[in-house]
Image 1 (cartoon, rainbow, N blue to C red):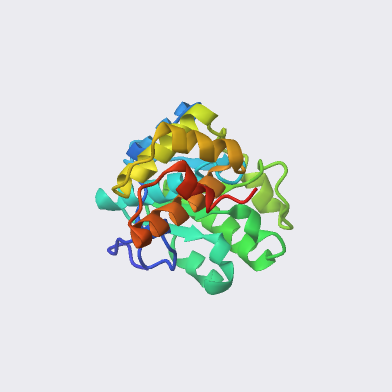
Image 2 (image 1 turned 60 degrees about the vertical axis):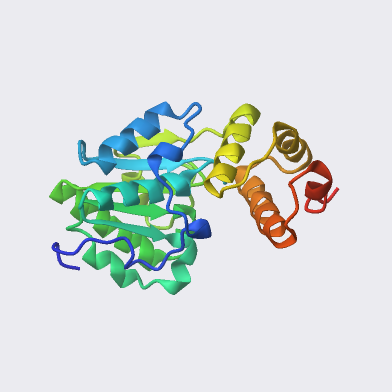
Length: 236
């Protein structure tokens, strides 16, 4: 890619429900420090290599997509690469990213067993660092515990900023569900939300999946969202 082009859309990824996340809609809870770092990176106030880690469903993808969106809106050169789609992306894409202002690499744990990708990311890390640009990465585990075959890459992951994304409390999950429902132009009562949280796995990915089903079903059936209606989507 030439330094004159600017887009995150060249990378083959999907934003959930066609909604691009932004930093303003991330309810931070105990994650004030990483959120402030990401805001400074996305606005080009600071240059960092930042490694975010945390359990699935803690909002890491939201944050990386939000950084990409904000940086793109500020006419910075940015790319977002979701490694869950590793089989659909050529490793050669990494060779063209060293001149970008910000590169976001999601789901690093997916690189296990892919030595060529690990080597490519090591080169990209070095190139971005030499150019004074930012690299934001995410994984489900800390950099010391991630399973990688290329030692040079594993050592680099801890060179700069490392932040754990802490899971939200049940109270914060209620706020998140309300926010997500509002963004989709429907409302969930406190009683319905509390019913959902008490009866399903409490990670946000599962809760968002339930929310998707409720949204689509309520539109199709033209029914009010009540506890009896929600019970149809929650298996005992």
